[in-house]
Each structure stands twice: as C-alpha cells, then as structure tokens.
Length: 432
Ligand SMILES: Cc1cc2nc3c(=O)[nH]c(=O)nc-3n(C[C@H](O)[C@H](O)[C@H](O)COP(=O)(O)OP(=O)(O)OC[C@H]3O[C@@H](n4cnc5c(N)ncnc54)[C@H](O)[C@@H]3O)c2cc1C
Image (cartoon, rainbow, N blue to C red; front, side, top):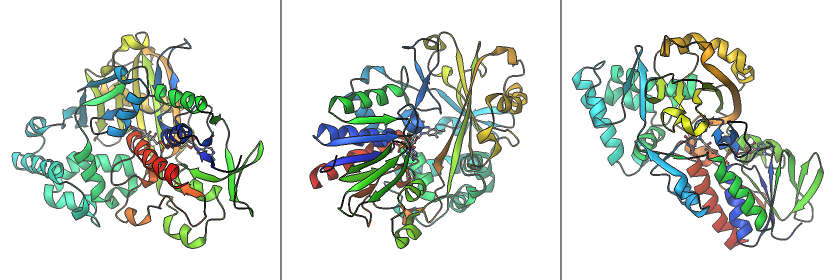
C-alpha cells in the first residue's frame, strides 16, 4: 500500500474518527490498535454474560451539552435516540458529608464556608462562565489565581482536592486556563449513550471496514520510519508495511519512542512526558451504595480513591440486569503500585472507606469485580503547557501527530479527540 494510503497509529476516539472520515473520502487506511477492543481510554466491556448485553466503560464516561463534535458523531452514526441527558447528583465529600456544589443555589447553601466566601465562590464561577476565552489567564497557575480571588479557605475546601486528586504533587502548578475551561465548558446536564459508548467505536470500526479500510486490533506498532523512497515503514510483530503517510494518535511521549527519526530540536520542545495513569476498580453490587449520588469527589483526606461514581444512580440498574455499578477511580503516577494491583488487592485497600460511605456496606453485596489501569490517561497541564503542544505537521514529511495531549485548555475528552480528528481529516483530505 503506498500512494494516498495512511497508517493510523491508535484506535481510540481520535484514530477511529480520522480513519472513518478518510475512508469515506476514498482513501486507503489501516488503523493499528494495541488492545483487542477498539475505543482506547473510552473503551468498554460487556457487563453481563450475554454477547449483546450492555457495554460499560472501563473508566466512567459522560458528555456535556457543549461536546458538540461528540454529539454530532453520535447522530451521524445513527445512535442519537440512545443519547440520554440527565441532571444526576454530583457532590463533594467534605467532613464526611456529601455537598452539592454544582450550581448557584447549592453554593449559597454550602455552610462549611462563611457567607462571604460562598459569594466569592459564586462570583468566580460566574466570571469563568462569562469570560469568552482563557487568554487573559495564560501564564498564571490556577492555585495562585484561585487562592487570591477566592481566599485560601474556599480554595482549600472547594477546589484544592480536585487539583490534588487529578494532578497529585503537581497540584500547585496547573495552568489557570485549564480551570477556566473546566467551569466555562461544562454543563450540569450530563449525557450518556445508553448501552455504552463502545457502540460509537464499534460503529466506527464497521464504517471504516465498509469503506475498504482496515482496523487491526491487538497489534502493537513497534516503530514507524521514513524510507529512502519517501514512503513510511510501519513495523509490528507481523512485519513491515509501507504507507504514503502516518498519523500517530499515540500520546506524544509514546509517538516519540515509536518514531526515532524525529529531530532533536523537535523532541526537546515537544516531548511531553508529564502525565498520570488512570485506575478504576468497578464493583457490581446487589444494592445501592450511595443514596442518590452519582458522582462523589472525595475532598476528605486519607481516602485511597479520588472519586466514587455510582453509575446506576444515573442510568438505572435495571438496564444491567439489576446490578448496581460503582466505580472507584484514581489518577496516579504510572509506576504507582495500585496500577499493577489485582482487583482483590485494590478492594482490600478500599473496603474500610466504602464502609465510611455507607456504614452498612458489606463485601457480601459484591457480585462482580473488575479492575482497569491505563497509562498516559491524564496530561499534567502545567503553566507552560501551551508552549509545548506539538503541531500536527512534523519536520518529517508525511508524518502527522494528532493526540489528546494537543487538547488545551479543555480537559481531554472524547469530544476534543473527535474534534481534532474532524479538523485534521479535512486538512489531509484536501491537502493530500
Ligand atoms: C478516568 C477517565 C475518565 C474519563 N472521563 C471522560 C468523560 O467523562 N467524558 C469524555 O468524553 N472523556 C472522558 N475521558 C477521556 C477520554 O477517554 C479520552 O479523552 C479519549 O478517549 C481519548 O481518545 P484518543 O483516541 O485521543 O486517545 P486514546 O483513547 O488514548 O487512544 C490511543 C490509542 O493508542 C493505542 N496505542 C498505544 N500505543 C500503541 C502502539 N504502540 N501501537 C498501537 N496502538 C497503541 C492505545 O491502546 C489507545 O487505544 C476520561 C478518561 C479517563 C482516563
């Protein structure tokens, strides 16, 4: 395969969307995906025993109303009637009690803070919503800006746990524009694709194949190198294949490993390795754990997980054969022991804390248990991040980078990977 043929490294939201668009434009595409299932970080697994049962994401997923590219994609694939919008309870655990902080009224009622701090919290949230872009906030860390405008007490109660949970020891170094986007772009209404987001990825794979493309699952790319004749050679365990061009959707650090010919000055500027892995323990329970709360961010210290997400307090347990599904999630350094722990080991560590969330909890309630870990799941968006975002074009002709580490200032999400893919597909299909 050579002229106009494209190898796409990575079969997540970005790679599959790009492949589908290029295949529909008449190009020859091959997607290489390391995992046996398509969908990358948004991939799911079957919860029940049936082959046609619902999928559940390995890591909790929902959409916001502002996720226009993802919503449009769901529509294009004929799945719109499955996209459900709700207003589930999202809360923070503070001093052992869940508090809603997801609107003006709940913030005004947030009694752990004095009234003046609650008003400042409301004013900062209103300012972030009103500010049309984050340019005036560039070069500033969120912790210094928020400490100044909210006061240290409101910052430490309302937001510091979010930064600690997501970014650990980098919590004080995160770019303020990232925080702006989090408040500006997010909505209280949350969208979920009933039956699982995996349906999007399965439909994309089918669409790529229908247009003559290939999706090779369970195939790791070892290297991609330019050949003397101006083509690209992609090497896997099965051998070497030739393409006109390569698009890598792998995390930037991984791309730089796979493409050893990228020049040193390009590497020095763009090789961003600061990222955490994600870990989720998922429990199927025979009853509800948290009364009505879908999303509980843990602000209290000492918990071994940063969020408890009871999926079935949002999407009814009936849709999963009566199983109550609970995620216990973490972002962690990629070499953290929990990233390699078995589900049982993680459960042993988490059990006393589940009893804090519901004193009646007993391990007899658990009917199923799954554990998932993924590297490079959360880019660490420090103050200087923007200057290190690589362009799509690289110094090597025919090699393009497109990955979730280029998403900024928004937090990465399916929407932004789909958006990047849509934009790049237009450029590649037009530019050749
Ligand atoms: C805990 C968690 C919660 C999240 N919550 C949400 C949410 O609520 N809503 C939302 O929209 N998004 C959410 N996201 C983010 C969302 O999952 C990602 O932004 C999106 O899936 C990224 O897609 P991608 O294709 O850009 O990258 P990825 O999904 O990372 O795709 C890259 C692919 O490359 C593959 N790969 C890596 N190395 C190789 C190799 N050498 N050869 C071949 N293949 C390789 C990987 O297996 C992977 O499939 C969440 C993510 C996490 C981790």
